[in-house]
Structures are given as C-alpha cells and as structure tokens.
Amino acid sequence: MRVRFWGTRGSIPVALTTADVRDKLAQALFQASGRTFKNYEEAHAFASSELDFSLTHTFGGHTPCVELEYPGDDYYVCDMGSGARPFGVHVLAKQARRPATINIFMSHVHWDHIMGFPFLGPAYVPGTTIRIHGCHDVIEHAFRLQQSPPCFPVTFEQLGAKIEFVRLEPDKPYAINGITVTPHLQLHGGDSYGYRFEHEGKAVVYTTDSEHKLENRTEAEAFANFFRNADVVIFDAMYALAEAISVKADWGHSSNIVGVELCQMARAKHLVLFHHEPANNDATLEGLLKEARRFEELTRGDHALKVSAAYDGMEIDL
Amino acid sequence: MNVTSRRYANAVVVHAAGRLDQDTCEAFRGDLLKHVDEAAHNGGAIVLDLSALEYVSSAGLRCFMLASRQAKAQHGRIFVAALQPMVSEIFQISHFNLVFQVFPTVREAVDAVSPEASTAFEKA
Image 1 (cartoon, rainbow over the protein chains, first blue to last red):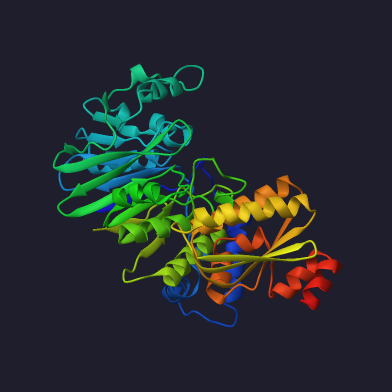
Image 2 (cartoon, helix red, strand yellow):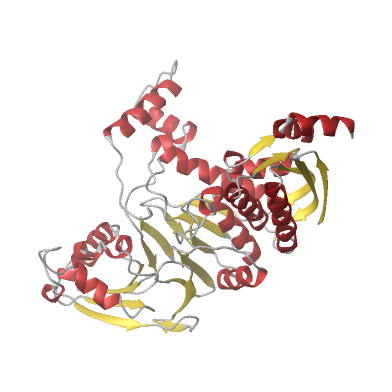
C-alpha cells in the first residue's frame, strides 16, 4: 500500500511568497559559493545532497487530505482539506473517464478539513460514488452548508456524483473492502476522530486535530493502544511542546515531542509530523523535525522510531 | 523521584532528583505548586535545582509550565538552574528554554532572586 499526502498544513492553506522563494534562492547561491557546475545534473545533485530540505523544497500549503492507496479500484482518503483539489485531479487522470468510487474518512468538519470538497473534480462527474464516513452527526450538514449560497456558486444538490454519508461509531472496527477501519475519539473542539487502517498486516493511523494533555497514564495508554505497533502514525504536531502547553493550551493540537513519546509507548515504527502551523516557514518546520528526531535519539530504549515531517506530495510505501 | 527544599531569605531552592515522568509528575506537581504558593505569599521566588534530575518527559515539563503559570498569576517568579546535559537538551528541544530563565548554577539563580537571598546562600 501507499500513503500519499495531498495536504499537510493545518488551519488554513499557505503559499510560498516571492520573498520566500528569493530567500531560498539567495541562501542556495551563498552555499554554492565557489563551486562550479558543468551542467544542470551536477547542480541538481548538489542541491539534492548538500542543501537542507527547507531550502530545496517546501512543506507545502494545502490543508489536510491524505490518500491511502490499497489494491483495488476504490480510493480511500482522510479529510477534504484544500489538498482534495489536487487529489481530485489525480483521480480524474487515473480513471481516464471511468467513474470512481471514493471513500472519505472525516476527522471532523472544521473548515480546514472540508474546504477542498467543493473543488474535488470527481464530485462533478456523474457515475462517481462518494462515501463520506465519520462519527459526527453534523457531517452532511457541514458539507451542504459550505456549498450553500452565498458562499459557493454550485450547490451540493448540483453535484453529479452519488454521495452517501456513512455514520461510524468510535472504537468499533469496520471492514471496508477488506480494510479494517477503526475510529477513535480525540480531544478537540467539537470532538475529532482518528482512524486506524489495517490491511494485510500493515497498520496506518491518521490522528490529526488531537490534543494530548497526558495528565495521567491511563489517557496516554489509551492512545498508545490505538497506535500500537502501527507502521505509520500521521500525527498532529502543530506546535513545539512549550507552545502547545502554554499559550496554545486547549487549542486542540499537539506537539512533535508528545508524538515521539506516544509512538515510543506504542512501539510504532514511523511517526509523521502533520498539520503544520501556518505561521511556521519551511526552516522552522525543518527545525521542529530535527528536534523531534533528536528527542527520539535521546529517549530511545530498545525500539527505534523513524520520524518524518509530512509535505504535500510525500509518498510512503509499505 | 525525591524532592527537597531549602530557604535562603526570600528564595526557596527546590531540589528535584530522579526521573520526572508520567509516573512521578503528579506528586511532584503537588509539592511544587505548594512551594510556589508559599513563595509568592512571601514575595519570594522559586529556584528549581535540577542538578540531580536525570530525565524529564512532556508530562514533567507540563508540571513546570503549570508552576510557571501559577507563579505569574500570584506575581511570583521561578528560575531554573543546573540542568544536566540531557535535561538541558530536552529544554531546548521542547522550547522550554524560551519560557524559563535558565541559570548554569543554583548560585547564579539565587543571586538573581535578591541580594538577601544571595547573602543567605553564601552563609549557608
């Protein structure tokens, strides 16, 4: 299977500014001072191997949308943030006019998690089937509301796809085309739900918009059990720890450090930092990743945890 | 986890030894907040002597944050001193070095509290 990140930013989409691009370019040129490159390939090799990720890439700016690609024709995707637009383009290109079936799993219906749906191309294609799964009772209302006048020119009723809403119950495993999907309640304003996807011995946990106060062992162990032995944990690491438990306490988000601790408790294999703070630039996000990796090294027992930071376009093969 | 305290004029030095994690933080938090409360009522400050703290988890750091919040609300002060290399790095990684004033030694932290505390520490 493959995990593909279409949107990794939290709260609101962001884009690189001209100043950001100029700054990256200036820093890259400075670091290349004195070197000569015979051709594009040499320059590319230098950029790929010697410059920081934050100079040569960007973590991207779409809000949450993560695709889980499993064998078969159906699509599986978590959340409909603005990353749903490029996801939809991908589906249309891959389908080549054949109608698609898309299974969506909603963490919650805050705006950054639904804003991409009106721009999901396949929703306009007759014959497409879209099943929107979630534990909240307001999901259909929220999807219809954001496409109601005067906010959007195309109403929900005008969409060409057949759209179904599937209500799930927390902590109950569901078998969907051979994939076991288990939702889990999380601490967030209006509640949010994480999802554990299991298929042929591989487990992926999508857990965003989730605050972990870790005031007692019971609370921590409940999440560690949800993450237990997961191959990938896509984790809300919006803030540094000091920020998450001071000025932004009770904002419903977590930190890179707590992500490492919970994954260590759960003996998960790969932690992916996700739902990046929109105020953080690429260098800051890379710094948070390096800090999480160092924390993992410092606190590692007999179990090594891989730590990555999600970026738009990132793919993980399992 | 072992917690002891000693007063030097208006400075209370709280010495924490061992591992501060999910299993030990609740008792530590109770002790620390009591000291913060007493120090604030006496117009003093807390110096957290972490020279014997081997490890601090996010749950432990949260205790420090709660103590800091309570101290601010009561117009009190908290200083942190004498971090071991690992705990010092965890402070930096978690950005707690931006929240707390960290001193290399207990002596320097006590000096920052007041001249009276400094003198009392000198005599002790």
